[in-house]
Image: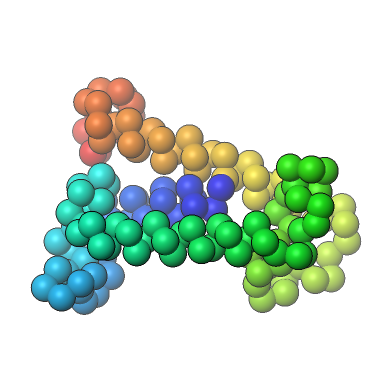
Length: 137
């Protein structure tokens, strides 16, 4: 869910012409990548590999975390990875009911971001597939 949220926001930001300063690699400025699917296509194979490995390491670290035992697929709570859920400790004094509501909102927002991201992909690859984005992408 959080990856989808980051993807949706990133797509919207770059679609509005906002980029990181500097180069993503020597001689390739971030601004040259443009937004949407064209950015991925413009990356070198090494750049794509680095992104996939980095995200894979984050996923493995989350799955190996001892804080969320049992695993959420085996009856544990979803969204209970401390360094991702609340890295600065804002929720440490919340009661269990408030935490449960916060986790439910997090999951709902993630699902909505997944739908939004997929609509951006559809609009970028098939003209007219998302009527709202007919003129925007």
